[in-house]
Image (cartoon, rainbow, N blue to C red; front, side):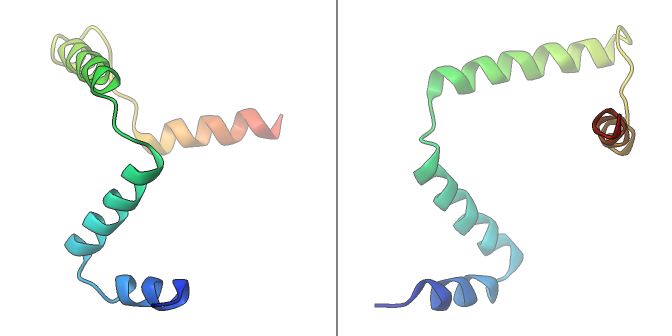
Length: 75
């Protein structure tokens, strides 16, 4: 049997697309998908997309969001 270190080294040597599959598969063992939650997230995403397209809300770049978060913790 392979050690954890061996498994990690082997996985790190895989192409990016295959590493994504490995990571997703491992995460699914920790966070078992729940179709009800997935359905609700889809509804939220569709609502947010609709708000963006209709210009009811304005997008905020991620770097600005994270800068605001960092600032709030520095206070």
